[in-house]
Length: 388
Ligand SMILES: Nc1nc2c(ncn2[C@@H]2O[C@H](COP(=O)(O)OP(=O)(O)OP(=O)(O)O)[C@@H](O)[C@H]2O)c(=O)[nH]1
Ligand SMILES: [Mg+2]
Ligand SMILES: [Zn+2]
Image 1: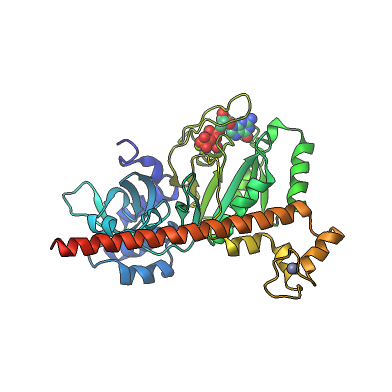
Image 2: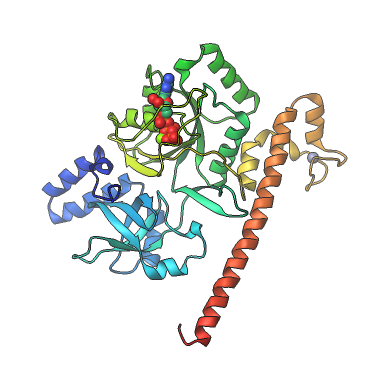
């Protein structure tokens, strides 16, 4: 499998340089250097504390940089290695969200003669980006784990959509990551169009960093590069065709990722089919994603409250603590709506996302309980058959 062959692409920049240095150091220094290298991949004392209690004695830790069905590509302080999930781990996983995804730290071991390492466990996620899986009710799809910043990419040309943007921002915050916005293809529109979109963002009280970029004129490229800090992980998400892979190629400095032209209506062709994490020369890590059509919110209560701080701030003055801002007397939010302090569209979207999130959360909880019950049923049945 080509993707999972030892790939130089994952060892670009600082990482490869560090590996060279490691080779020249004595054993004691080597250990120190290895630790430093692991930190360059985002390792922190928080993970170390979990690894001490969760990883077996013979296991070491590595970061997941790509997943292809049951195969994974890991990166650790000795380089990239291919891995599979250990049978016991796979057996005990209750839902897809329990399995490793890009950005996860895992406990793994490898017998010297084996091509594949075996993954025995996933360390807790410091942050995660998830969405409601497309289609079907109540399933969570993990997009990436241990992401510091989610950069939502929209193209100024055709793609800009405030409501869709808010969904991404809500889920980024719900998972504990910082959100940011990147508007691409500024070369295809008049400056006034970009200015209008920026005005819409501020009117909707979206107070996250907003950057603009043209992959053609490279306007904004330096600012983007400067915004990416060494040792931190940045996850680029957005519709197909907005230029995610093109901009990552720009950051890497060569065409490492496949890209393809959009249709006449600006529709992308879903060129990228896998998520993958790459280490840039100056030490920041970036995750490319396939274009996403929908971004369903789920269990995002906190993310919604943070994204709509203008509304939740007002709500503190409502007479009732559990005010739903629909018909209660003494509702400060409705007062702000009436006076025009809060935009009606903005408020509608807030209510809609809150309802959708709670609905999906409930069906997810029900489904998980069913899966658990089913798991228990299987275990009991196996015990009765003497097969456990
Ligand atoms: N004019 C212009 N074209 C761009 C820009 N950025 C990307 N493109 C073009 O847009 C097309 C799609 O770019 P990709 O990088 O493949 O888009 P993507 O977001 O990775 O798409 P998926 O992998 O399908 O999710 C390519 O033909 C790019 O050359 C830009 O800033 N300006
Ligand atoms: Mg792509
Ligand atoms: Zn109220």
